[in-house]
Length: 168
Image (cartoon, rainbow, N blue to C red; front, side, top):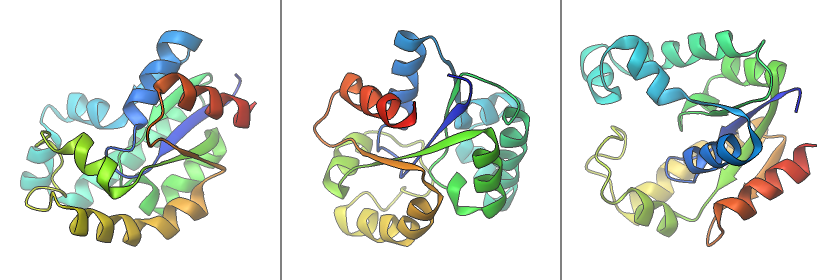
C-alpha cells in the first residue's frame, strides 16, 4: 500500500488492535500516536494532561501527524480526540485514507473497564457518559472518515480484511 491508513474513532473502538494486526500480518509499519507522544514527552498521557493541559497534548498530536504525512505503508492508530482538530484531518487526508472504527457504548465500556490510562474517562466509565462523549465526537469523526468499519463482535482479522478491501 502506497498511502497510510489513519485509524480514528472513540477510545476502545479497536484502533490499536487493528493497527497491530495490520503490522503483524500485512507488514505495515504501525504508529501508536499516544505511545509515540509519551515516548517523546518522557511522560504519560495522564501526566501531560495534568502538567501541561489538554491543549498541549493536542498540539503534540498535530506535530506527530506532520511528521507522518510523507511516510508510506504506515497504519496510524490515532488518539480518540485527534480528529477533533481540522488541521489534523487535513494532515491525515494528505497522507492517506482515514478509517473510522466504531463500536457501541456497551462494547467500549467492556473494553476500557480496567484501563485507567484514559484521562477523559476517569470518573466517567458508564454507558451514559460514554454515549454522551461519543455523540459529541460523532459528527467530526463521520465528516473526516473516508470509510467506516464497525468493530462490535468481530475479530481483528475480519476488521483488517474490511479495512484493506475498502481502501485498496
